Image 1: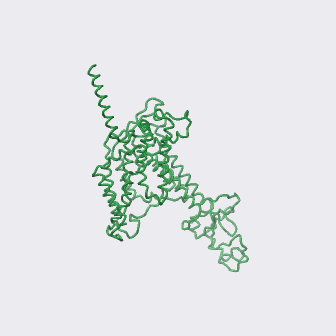
Image 2: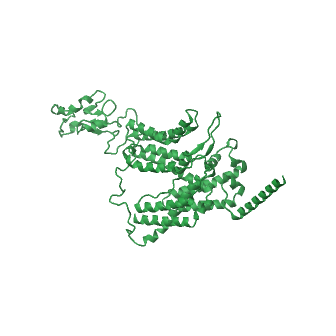
Image 3: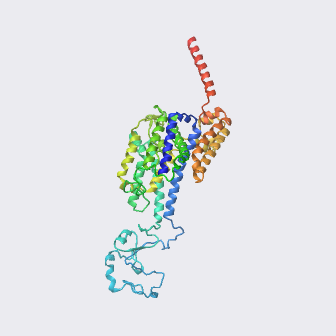
Length: 511
């Protein structure tokens, strides 16, 4: 923890230096090529991890395949007494007399009173050989069996204290996973539907994720199947027992580890800086029609201070959340009122305010007081939310549009603006280069040996974009990407602009 503190400390110092020397101007070189490659990587991680977490449930609750209707091995039985003879063995071979049973597997008259608690469960369809009760609806539940001192046997039983296979858990998890995603998407699209007043549609769309999570959590609770739930600590304490809230910086094994921590800190600085600034660039896109200032330096300064505070307390570092930031921005979109039937609403801009961001983090803090409620949320429902966030953040990304164009015949291609001005072969070449960069980033991130070099890959990505200036024309890059800053080109453009202004004034004066 002390070494981690020094890494965080050097990250904080490096970020403050970046702010002091105005190095945030480097965001000029973060073009659409870089920002979309990075944002798509984050979105794909959300989607990939959602499915992988669902697959882990399959490992914990294995589904028995190849089972016929007559197969009884997946039943669950409740044995009223502590010992039950095995049906597959001949109990007459047993010489040991067990209380309640004779050597032939029959209950003795002297111990028949032991079944007094079970008489009202004994029905013809509920009892099997050797007085074993079938655990099913209308007979007895697992909870009642355990409460009355019974013993659960069979591969279909679920004992809370013992991990056993319950096939229903995985199938219900799949339903919760896809149901949460589908219902959230349906609520989100309700904004453009023809039903209900405009205020109702917007409210349902704004709270699409919350309504979907609430609905499927209630369904899971009513079904009563033990799906994996959100693991929330009962007490507000540190993760490691015995550790205080404040990390001791001097508690390092060797003093030379303090300057050595600068090396991993530099890699972390690159990642944090580019993560923060790329997210800010995406949020501040022209299509979002923001009016307030960008604040790249202020955001980075606040981030550096928070990283220092989190390092002292031994908490995870506070960094930009690209997918969540985009989801937040899209939820604040203002649209025009539609009065003509069939006309689609137009985007007017973003509701620029600090209230929702403040309320979000206040509610995150308040959530520590409702841990009992949070423990009822099934994990598959949260995985469905991850899938929703990953899928929705892909919408409107030009990179995704160009990837889909790769597989479309020309006559079916949408009327994208860049397809009007750039030859299709050049569009495909640009897309393939960007796709190869994305795959390389994914491989570097996924392999443990190379994962530490992932921050450097972001710089490589920006370098590749610079090389594209020598492969594509500036006209092609204007429509497919943003133009990189160039002092000479900017001087020529300024000169041409001044000439144009002079001609306009001359024409106006002569008129």
